[in-house]
Image 1: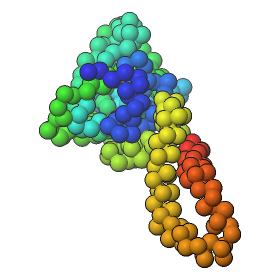
Image 2: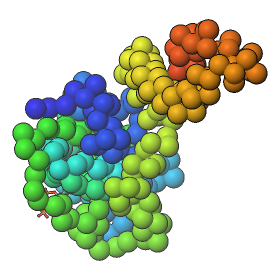
Image 3: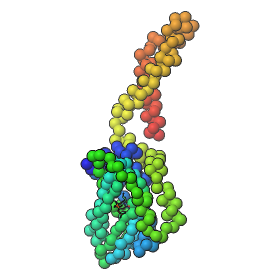
Image 4: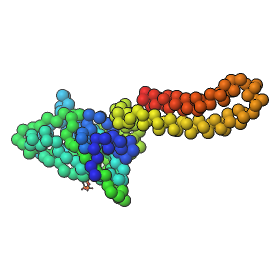
Length: 259
Ligand SMILES: O=c1ccn([C@H]2C[C@H](O)[C@@H](COP(=O)(O)OP(=O)(O)OP(=O)(O)O)O2)c(=O)[nH]1
C-alpha cells in the first residue's frame, strides 16, 4: 500500500529517514527529491554553473545525485518517478526502485531526449519517490553503496565529505530528528489533546509511584503529620495534587519538546 502524506510524516524518524527534510516536498502520496550540486556525465563530474544550474546536455545522460539521503526499514520499499514538468521538456522517464533497508542519497539518471540543453537548478525537485508498505518485511539487506557512488568514477574530496555525512541510518536519523523542519511537521499531525493524554498518563503513573514510595509511608504516620502541617495540607488536597502535578509535568514536557 502506498504511503500518503500523513503516513510519510507519521513514519518519519521511525521507519523512514529523509535528510534534509522539507515539508513542502511531501506531496499527496509521495516525496519530491531535489538535485544536489553533484552530477556526472561520461563518468566525469559536471560542475554547476555560477548561477547554480546543472546543464543537462541534449541527447546525453547525466547522473544527478539527490540532495536527500533516504533510509527505509525492511518493511518499506519504493519507486522513483519522473516529474511531468521535466518530462514535458523532453527529459527521460525515470522508473527505478528503492529497496527495503536502503541508506543514502540516490543517483538519478536523467536522459535529455530533446535538442536543447536543460538547466536544472541545484535544489530544485526533479524526481518523485513513492513509498510502499510491504505486507511482510523483507529478509534481504540492501547491498548497494550509499549514493551508488560505485557507479561513478570521478569523486572529489568535497563529494566524499558530503557523502560521509549521510551514508548511515543513524547519521540520517540523528540529523533528521534534530531539524526544526522535522519537529514542525510532526507537531502538525499530532493532535495537542492526544499528545497531552499520552504525557499525562505517563506522568500520572510516575507520580503515583513516587507518591507511594517516597511520600506514602510518612504521610500515614499521624505524629509525622502533626509535626509537618504542610504535609497535612497535601494529604487533604491529595486529589488536586494527584491530578495537578502530572498535568503540569505533561504540559511542561510538551512545551519543552516544542521548543
Ligand atoms: O534511480 C535510482 C534507483 C535506485 N537507487 C538506489 C536505491 C535502491 O535501493 C538501490 C538499488 O537500486 P536497484 O534495485 O535499481 O539496483 P539493483 O537492482 O541492485 O541493480 P543495479 O545494481 O544493476 O543498479 O539504488 C538510486 O540510487 N537511483
